[in-house]
Image (cartoon, rainbow, N blue to C red):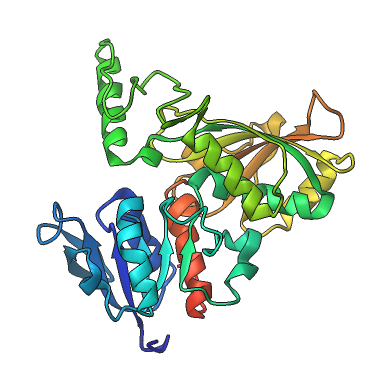
Length: 343
């Protein structure tokens, strides 16, 4: 591996997508020691697109095995099919791979990691690591410190997920639909089963029985990250007309009654968590306020009205940053053994 001071050879696979571009931003903002950058994508973009990084313009190359050869690190955000095709071979060839797709999240041999939650999984320096689902990441950053302090017994979550979680096409569709509404026209569905502007859609993900695939991911991944295989979790995922920033309404019960004051004290000291919690002053997290930030924001922390001693809270994060790119880069920082400071 190239020494950290000389700079690392880093590949970003899926560099032209919304998460890929955010990966480049996060790498630059955190001063990750990139010596050589390889921006890689599908044939649709390879050779036709250029991306800026570090004051230079970088051509986008084709994502294939030869393009990954000799890299120190590869950050994948190109979908499960590409990850399955390229990531195992790259890892076997000595490349450290962090994959943002669902390809390896259920593989017991591949660590599923949120550094603030189970970063110890990286101590063995695995060559291939899976980045969890965006909604799962922010949920576990907020819930893990409460579980460590009080012992989690039951969890319910309803998500309010931004259009960017589905990709650039839905963000562009939301903008067009919002313009239609401004002209007093009925919005036209595109990139999703129903119009998103002026709407709330409790679907759009692939069905898995009576649940959505997204709901299954949150349940399974949360259990794995918290090492609570039998934890009862209820989940409903909803897409909302927001470009960036996922929000979650969370209900949590513990092994013993927990007061909001005790929970606030725990969360105030928790890595990656920022409290914004004064209902009387209208201070609470919102997606717009969270956009562009790295924290998982927690507010509306209170006793659950339906179960004394349990908690209700509201959790918000930038789904492109902590929900995807930032978490991947934080994993990479630990795996590559570099000390990195945010700008």
